Structures are given as C-alpha cells and as structure tokens.
Image 1 (cartoon, rainbow, N blue to C red):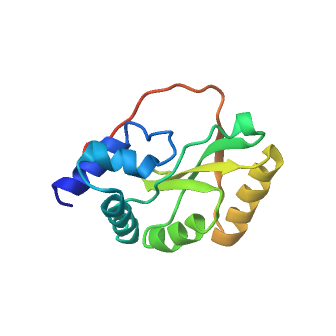
Image 2 (cartoon, rainbow, N blue to C red):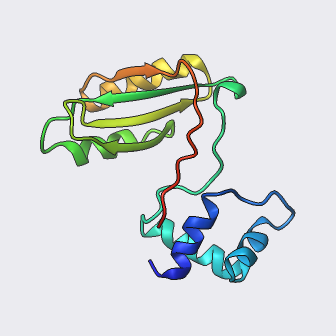
Length: 147
C-alpha cells in the first residue's frame, strides 16, 4: 500500500458520506478524484488487502440474527475449512486465533431460523462442530485499524 491507499483505508473507517455522490465527496477529502478512489478500492479488494467494503447493518433490527461462532479446525486443514466457511454468504468475516477454538467467524442471517440452518450446513460441509455464541448484548467499541 502506498500513502494514498493508507489514506483511503484510514479515512473510510471513520465513516462514509451520505450524499448524492458519496465516492466523489470521500475522494475530495482524501485529495484524489472519484475515479481514482473507485479504481483503488477495486484493486485493494481484488488484491485481498481489503476483504470487504460496504455498510454494516444491524441484523436484528432488520429481522435477522447475528452470532459469533467458533470451530476447532485440525492442524493442516485451516485453509480448506476457511474456504468452505467463507463460501457461505452469511459469514461476515472469519479469522484465526491461537487457541483450541482456532477459527472464529460472525454469522449474520436474514431470519433467526436461518442462523441454525446455516450452522448445520457449515457443520455438514466441514465435518466439524460449530460452537454457537449468539449475541446477548451489544457494545460499541469504535474499533479502527490504522494502515
């Protein structure tokens, strides 16, 4: 990443304009034009520097469900299992931890019933038990990662 890529990542984590031309407005704040911002975002996503760029929705307020889930993935199978888990559209993100439960992911579903169905489908596809930790209370921590 160059200085402009870092400025894009750092700036857009703080919010995104709600306007008729949000990309043009965000680009102006960064000091580039709209076409360059779009081109760079596409490249950052294609290169997997960014895994996702988009809004965060409150699944429960929309009638859905949200849960944190964990797997015990056998050594040497992490990449294979991660590819399977990430293939489910309900999986928001997935990450590794140095722990007995070494894969964690957030599952956001359109309905509360779909949460259980998706977990069962992931168990069938991976052959591993999914440990389900549904959200009981929400806290806002304002997490940011400086690039």
